[in-house]
Length: 408
Ligand SMILES: Cc1ncc(COP(=O)(O)O)c(C=O)c1O
Image: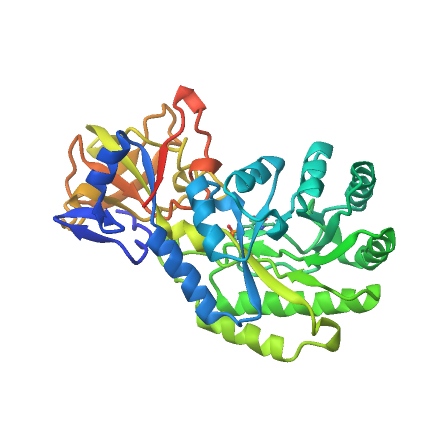
């Protein structure tokens, strides 16, 4: 048998059935009308934000990275909880606009922004995190045409990466940001153009669990911001320190020691150089805020045996939960936390594979793990489904279509 990842805190059984936000999932599925269904817990999201606020220095603002989960009700919820939003496309700009989010709190990072996307962002007063000198020129030209003052920040490609991170976004040749040594010249150009200079965005990596590695990257980020500010000679209004806080997906993963990250950052803030004394700082987080608050529910439609192994075949699959299938940026496939939701407190009785309904061997949600004996009609739950699930999976593959989503 292979181990499963750790079920996040905050989930319990009511009459043997997994409950989310105090409601058994059978009732949630009934209300939604069908499976597969993503359920996101507003309580767990609120608790996560509160824990972050508690642990981090007061001076640090909190931004939500929309890419992690752009579901409308979640964006609306975050509009009450966080100080800003980071978007990565014109499509996400429309989603935050639809959610009624104040667009002055939004910044737009991402390579390859099209002219229409730049125009929409400039017109809306969104801060552009510029990814290249050429993009800066285009933004200035388009803003002039629109008769608008663009709000411009520079995404810096740092000379370091976030150690132990699942996804490295800095440290060497990268399509993201502008190499640090070329940044001061561009800052001076932006300031002299009359654009509103907004500051730096320095994102070194994501999905790190080691508090010391996160703290070290934050320290390097602050040092880099100070050096670039001094070299450019322009005050730094704002600095986005990136994010990188990860969540435990796999057996043996431990949650980030948030207090340690907060304490180390407070120490760094206490010894900032004069050049950064007036600077506002934020971190931008996606999965840390929503990942563990989401559960993917699918129904078992067939139970079969092959060569002595049990296959629980569901109506869901990798087309909704690509990451759990191991096909979204992981090298070795390991099991996400999973359970038979309708037998949530029953003991382990057998080893089984939970698979999806797609005719590909890649469509495996859980591999040879221990579960209570499940039958056709039972619901399975895949945890850690709140981030990079519904919107980061190929929903139309094999004509399947999207899952339902609900925030409770
Ligand atoms: C620029 C940027 N911001 C935010 C994120 C969100 O990362 P996470 O969801 O791990 O917090 C990413 C992820 O790759 C990113 O590239």
